[in-house]
Length: 404
Ligand code: FE2
Image (tube, rainbow, N blue to C red; front, side, top):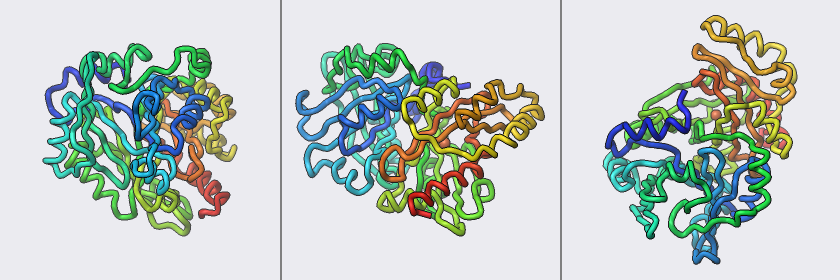
């Protein structure tokens, strides 16, 4: 099993290939009010609010907050002027993900390679540096409003330092540390939610465009197809979608791509697009935990709103899952079955093992971005066996929103 701690080491030995992607460096959200969003994600999901830049640090056109948990880094950015792109995009799309930034050995080389591969520039390489080291970034456009930044780091700004010494040095030049006695950070250290790293990051694209973006990830970022699902896998009577999972060469970065499929009623992907100004974008971030029961219990206690499934889901799930596990010589699901049901967690199994997963409701007022909380016991899949039950639950939510 790949873990966050082995990922850097594995990539470190790798090579000098410019597109050898080391990690998800950070995920940048454009939000209407970064200061308030920071406290929402800290209180509900247990993130540490670590660093910031705003007018008081000399940042005149944007304010950003860096939130971390395990190896997850989220950057929440608000524009401070009407011209700032974050202001415009929040108007069009609401709060959501702008940038899935990838750590590389040399951001400029990675950027040039991606451009040579047919990628379109989002922004040219820029390096910021001070006496502690430097950070170089360059961005390419991916689907819709989303971009991928390449980020390379030197000196104290190196990613291994960020992981092992949070709070001891800045994320990049220009950021300042939050006060060390911020109460919510203290509380989160005492009551951890246990989220470790970004397991995968899913994009929604327009109908008929999935294969275009699959090829884009193959050509531009040199990804390979990891798994695919068609509408026979992912459909209910009314709504459907198709999905292909793209992965970086070392499988450390997984980017599934969804498109809506024909159904009697509106696909959840179509609903997303309609509330996202018809622009493709990031649908969900799956955050990995080693202990699904603990994480979900803690998140529920904090008020995270999860999708709920009918109780009947649990009438058949154990037979289905444990049968698959036995067939492939794996131990049965070891988590307490009653507790799994109580917490409303979903279970699925394949030839490699099983996984536990649960999906939040939308994280903002629009039915766009949500989180998945996932833990894996061998399975490297995405919960295909849950799609039907899940989509029926999603349709109920769509109906409540008047969007079915
Ligand atoms: Fe997922």
